[in-house]
Image 1 (cartoon, helix red, strand yellow):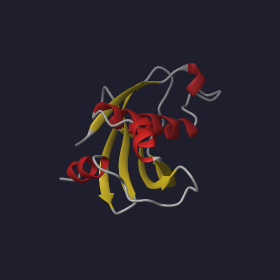
Image 2: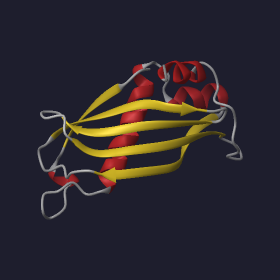
Image 3: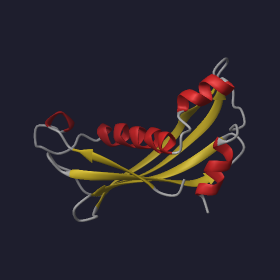
Amino acid sequence: MGVHRWPVRVYFEDTDAGGIVYHANYLRWAERARTESFRAIDLPHQLMMQRHASLLVVRRIEVEYVAPARLDDSLIVETRVLAMRGASVDFGQAVLDEASGATRAVLKVGLVCVRAEGMRPAPIPEPWRSVLRDGMS
């Protein structure tokens, strides 16, 4: 899996009255980037739901807002696996300015695998487990 890079353009709808990106949009972009990272390796969330009746849900998120992004900025969201345990995986994500590489926000996101019925923790199924484990090396 390695580092996945997903592009984002800041639109007017993403900003507040001052033209600064509204804080919640970083969470939305991070979610989309994680989803796209799974699609990029041909293991979308929908496949886990269909084959294993399981899904990955957010357990916790830490966000550090480093510098504001602004209207029309071109950004990159980088996603990497930090740690994996039986039913959980931690991702590190960074929102970077595409032109300068300057960091706009840093996120640490903890996901847990749960069964669709009952929402109880379940081991991350194969082949997701192997791919995520390999992404740490």
